Image (spheres, rainbow, N blue to C red):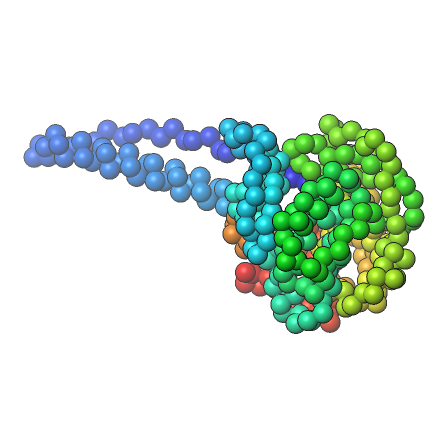
Amino acid sequence: MSAEQTPSQPALLTLPIPDLVVAPLVSAHAVQGYRILFYMAVVVALAATAVAWNMNSRPAVQVPPTPEREKDYAYTIDAYGFKYQGHTGNVIDEYVLRYGAWEKDHLFFVRDYLKNLGEPNAVVIDVGSNTGHHTLFYSRHAARVLAFDPYPPVIVTFKQNMALNPHVKNVELFEVGLGDSNAELPFVAPVASNHGQGSFRVDTPENPEMKQFERKLRIVIGDDYLKDKNLGPVAFIKVDIEGFEESALKGLRQTIEKHRPMLEVEVSPPPVGTIDTYDRLKGLFPENYEFFVLPWTAEGAAQGKYQLQKLDWAVHSKGHQIELIACPKERLNALPGLGGGK
């Protein structure tokens, strides 16, 4: 899961202080009091303007780690029914430490969808499970979670997080990536400040500082790999694999056609990703799927509030990753966040 930096805050305005016209009967103390009140009003107005700007603008990128804090401080917190360990200096773990979760709005959205769906045996597939944060959250709201990630360092942390949660019995980790072929491919490793950026898209890494991993990593065709996994009803699939999503979706086509789950897919624009037109996107899904986006907001990151927007490819595909929600028409009644939001 990738994250970047926010634009700088707008500069504070320098406001001229008008001369006060004082009637002869007004005392010097009263004049001073008026001046104090005026200064206070200016401060309040500026603060309100800053808050409004922060809440209403959609930054092109995400909030960076706090620079003043210790860069490699290990922590363990309780988060929504599970324990999670992380390190400061990494943007994903910084969010977990500050707000209790990374992509809190995404998590609450999936939680509410699964609740609305009302499927007691619901299976969730987490493609790009990273250190297990989302997987552990899903495990609280699904009967079974199948997690996929090929990158050894995050797999180590995933297993450590699972060890912190011995009560979680419904998670299975598979140490492979998903694609449209069975192969071993080069992989670019994430930078230290964002362990969610690793990708099989070695020629167009998201971050120019990313370096190729020391060995090739395994990918498998999802449909073939899942055939002997005794799948129950697949209710939800998350795909967050930094530009490799088209290959993964092609390899999961039969699974999607059979179970018709709701999907959340982080779609990266070219050159990082390969999905460059709406027709190409639509062709990755069976008939009668509708498409939405889950836009980033400050309230979403901090409080978990969300509201879906209908996908407008001409608008939403311009230079930013798209948090795509793909839902079959027959399950739209279970889709939260349409209209008033949460």
